Image (cartoon, rainbow, N blue to C red):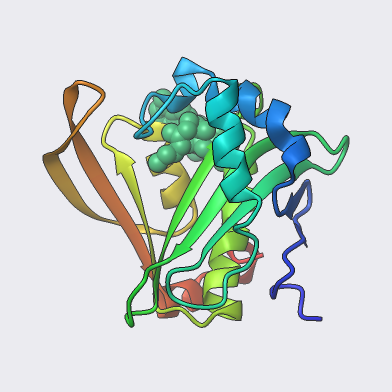
Length: 193
Ligand SMILES: CC(C)(COP(=O)(O)OP(=O)(O)OC[C@H]1O[C@@H](n2cnc3c(N)ncnc32)[C@H](O)[C@@H]1OP(=O)(O)O)[C@@H](O)C(=O)NCCC(=O)NCCS
């Protein structure tokens, strides 16, 4: 089996990425119940029932084979199998071979490069396994950690959309990042593994 094809169970130096299971409830609650985590997400903080409902959907999003599919992966520390975050790769439902990435990591584990390490796997899946043309990410303009992750991934800042959405009782601005398949392939090998 090609390591980059479903069923997805992928490794990096420090991390294991795998589909979600119902037993990830407590780890997801520890993340999504926190105000500081959801500050720049569309929803949340989530209570136990909301986490359970969302996890029930995530558990089913374990394969990505065509437009409209969404892959969700739990991020675990290899050292102790602790679930510290989650990743999303969303193949857009059209013919343009584009996908959107998303990522969240528990604050206790932020700032250690885990998200960059894990999200690189998503780019590898998108370009090397699925043959997509462009991967993009969107972040609220004040979310500097998210922007920085995308820069470290080799993505380009393409746009800033001023006050394009009304979220959580305020106008929010969006910064868009993207990388093309040829840009991905031009990155040094160590930034692709
Ligand atoms: C965005 C997020 C996933 C990043 O996770 P992480 O594991 O800390 O990411 P990394 O460690 O790989 O990289 C973070 C980078 O942002 C930088 N950073 C963190 N906070 C920052 C801030 N307030 N201002 C500027 N840079 C910041 C870090 O220094 C690091 O860059 P460096 O390696 O050049 O020092 C994490 O902050 C998070 O879960 N946030 C809440 C959920 C969220 O907003 N998700 C993104 C939605 S678009």
